[in-house]
Image (cartoon, rainbow, N blue to C red; front, side):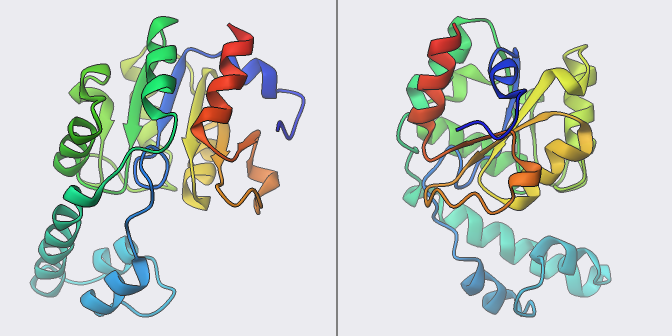
Length: 207
């Protein structure tokens, strides 16, 4: 379902940036458990909290977070429609990138595990060590420079508020993948879909 009149035009764009966890994969992160393991206050953004600590306290927790996320790699499964969507965008000549709050190393291992590593250039995968984490739009700006395009010609696809805020902050189109089909942030959402298969159907009709 499209939330505004630009939805159909956004589907025709050729520069696509994806969130990773919960968007290209089925959700595996239990952030409440991760907060407890790291001692992060309930309801607090994990990365923002860790960044607020001095190095002596924050770095060990960053290392522990990396270990937790690495330990989840074997549990990662592709979201339904993932391969078909990426192949469809590739066939029509789209540039594709990933902007994740994970590390780039974990992102690279994840997409290889999912079987889509060959569709993404390493330089087009940005993690929390490469750019300020979402919702900061810097990652999208960097990709726009790399692709020699304007952010308004890009699409940000994600399953959470930070992804949509990032797209809006950069001026890109936004696609919210919400498996519950609630779409709680309509003011930030150009297109809402329940699955990647639904997004693929929309794109195929535009091709």
